[in-house]
Amino acid sequence: MDSPHHFVSRALSGACLVLSLLIGTSQSVAQTTQKDSLRLNGFGTVGMSVTDAPGSLQFRRDMSNLPDERSPTLKNDSRLGLQLHYDANPYLELVSQLVFKHGTPAVDKPADALAWLFAAYRPSSDITIRVGRTNTDIFLLSDYRDVGFAYPWVRPNVEVYSALPLYSLDGIDVSKTWEQGDARWKLKGFVGQTQTYGTIGRGPDDVFNFKLDKAWGALISREQDGLLLRATLGRAKTTTTASDVTNAALSFLHSLQSLPYPDVVAEASQLENALGIKSYMATFGEVGFSYDRDDWLLSGEYTVAEAKSGTRASRSAYVSAGRRLGDFTLFAMTGWQASKLGIIQAPNWQALGPDVQMLGQTSANSINGSRVKQRSLSLGMRWEFHPQIALKVQVDRFWVESFGSGLWVGSEQQQAHPFVATTALDFVF
Amino acid sequence: MARHLTSTLRRASLIMALGMMAFAAKADIYVIVNAANPIQSLSTKEAIDLFMGRTRFYASGDHVFTCDLPRDNVTRAHFYRALTGQSQAQVNSYWARLMFTGQVMPPQSFATEQAIIDVVKHNTGAIGYLSYDPQDKNLRVVLIARDPH
Image (cartoon, rainbow over all chains, first blue to last red; front, top):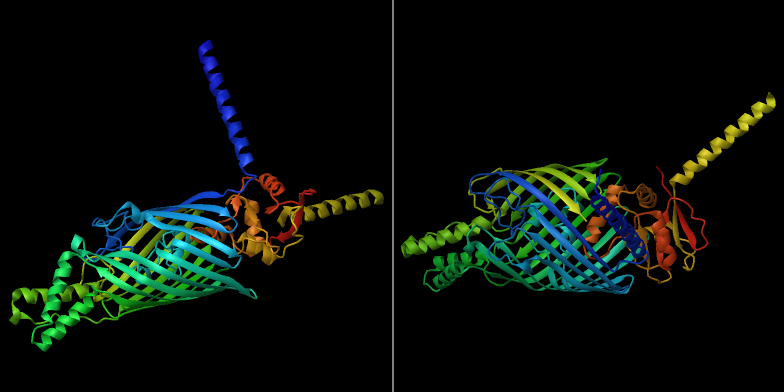
C-alpha cells in the first residue's frame, strides 16, 4: 500500500501531466486559427556507398566533394538541410537555407553551409524579384539537388551535375509566369556572382577555387499535364585560383614561352592554356525535360559547356525512366560526359633539363587527369514507406575511358569499369 | 402478404439509395471559404492553382491562406487525387521539390477537419477542404471535388 507521501506525489505528477496536455492542446488550438508567418523545415539524407574501383579511383558526388578513402562511407551522400521561411506580408518573404555536408576539407568553414539568404518581392501575382543569395537555376534539379526526397535516385546524374557544383548565386533574379491555355510558362533572368571549389586529388595543392563573376543567364520553361520542358543559357567570367605550387608551375610554363624555340613555345602555351588557371569566359547551355504522370517518371537533360581555357568545355547528358508501383518506384538512368579537349601528349623537353621535362610531364598528367570521358548506367528502387521518409537502393556501373577519369579523385590512364552501390534514407520535415 | 412484400422492397430500396448516397458523399470533397470571402465559386483549375502553390492570390486580388490536412490523412489523399489525379506520394514529392526551392511554401497543415473549420471561420482569406458539407452559415462551399477512385 502506498504511503501517503508517495500517493500525493504520484497524484501531483498525474495532475501536472494532465494539465500540461490540456494546456498544450489549447495552445495548439489557439495557434491554428492564425497563419504561421515563420516556418522552419528541413531535409536530409543518410547515405552509405560502397565503391569497387581500380586502386587510384575514388568516387564522389560532385567535384567539390572530397571522397572518403574508406569504403563503405557515409560522406558521399549524407547531408542535412534547414530552411527558415518568413512571410513578412503577402508581397515580401525572407528565406534562408543551410546545408551541412562533407565538402573540401581545405575550405570547410561555417559560411560554406549558407546555401541561400534572400528576400523575395512579389509586386504582382506573376512577377517575383529575389535579391541575395539564391540558387543557380541552370539545371532541372538546381533548386533541390540536395533534397533527396524530391527525386527518385540517390543522387542526380553525376555526368551532368558533378562537374558543375554551383549551388548558389549572389545577385538578383526576376521571373515572370503566364498561362497559355492549360500550359504554364516561366521566364527568368539572373545576374550575380558565385564561387565553388573543385579538387583533383587529396592534397591541399589539389584544391582549386572557381569564381564566376558577372554571371548572367536566362531560362524559359513550359509545364502542362505533367510535362515540363526547359532551356537555359548562362555566361560568366571564370577565374581559377590554384595552390602556390600550381601557380609556380604556371609561371614557369609562361616563362618558357619567351625561349627562341617555336615548338617549346607552342607546347608550353598549350599546356598553360589547357590548365585553365586564368580568367576566361565560359558559356553554358542546357535543355531538359521531366514527365510525371500516371505512375511514370521520365526525365533527361543535355548540357553544353564552352570555355576557351581548361578542360571545362564538354558535352553531357542523361535520361532516366521510372515506374511507380504503389509505395515503390523502380528506375533506370544512363548518363554520359565527354570533354572537348583531346588527350594532351607530354612534351619532349629533355634537352632543357630533367626539371623542365618533369614540369611538362606533370602538367600533361594534370590536364589529362581532369578530362572526362565516361558513361554510366544506374538501376535502383525507392520505397516511400512513410509520407516523409524514403529508402533508396541504387547500383551504378561506370565506363571510364582512358584519360577520362576527371570526375573521380585519382587518375586512371587505362579504361576502368567501377561499381558504386548505395543505400540512402531521405527525409523531410 | 403483398403489402408486407411491398414494404420490404421499399425498405430495401431506401437502404440501397442511402448506401449509394453515402458512397458518393464519401468520395466528395468540399472546398470551403469564409462566408465573407467575395469568392462565390471556384473552378477545378483555380483550386489547383491555389492548392499547388501556383498562385497566392484569389482572382479578386486578395491574398489566399490555404489550409491542408496532415500528409498521411485519408481525406487529403482523396482531395488531391480528385483535384489533380496525383497520388499522395506524387503530391508529397511535388511539395518537397517546391518547398525547398524557396519559391513557395505548401499549404499550412492542420491536425483535423474541425481545425480547418476554425481557421476558415477566423480568416476571410482562408480556404480549406472537408470530407463533408459543413452546413454552416459562416462558411461557403465553392467547389465539390470528386475522387474518381
